[in-house]
Image (cartoon, rainbow, N blue to C red):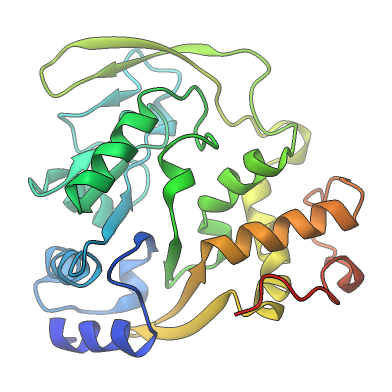
Length: 268
């Protein structure tokens, strides 16, 4: 049995921040048996990451509903991203963004959360460069790899990668906490000929590590990566510039080292 105290200490040993906006992608199976089960893990994450004014973000995605009448129902625990997300959705300490396909459950600093909530009410893309995802400062990959790092979709939007979204928006319906239905024109991730490009996000990992963008550790029994979002974004921007903006995720061929080695900025 892994105790909450042990997890707290593991986070501390990795240098995980307590005053930043942190998103957690997780595999509970990889973590092992935790004191208090999934709720216990969520409790220790909330306690740790919000201690000094930080915000904990738990994905609560509902992109699997984009063809249904209601894409996001804020009163439902329906989500396509696992048990921890379902537990987070039901936790009254959190607030959920109104992103119809890629909502987040937010815990912690009320002022920061209010800004993220407001940002996601104005966007028309899943990880819009002006939305809640743009506020993320760290990514914790818990028992999963970069293929689960949704923040990298946001970086692609920031640096201008095309061919990721539908060519036209679709009217998606959001049911708010009061039962009101809100229609929102929204572009959605469309795989097309490339398939799911996120499965090839691990191609960036050697470059992220070259610039010290990842700290390795464990949470429970799960191998864990603590990723500095600013460094990840800078490295992807550098690679896009040096590669001439070509499509990099059409295959699993490793990135050319010349695209990211030799630069000093981004190092910590």
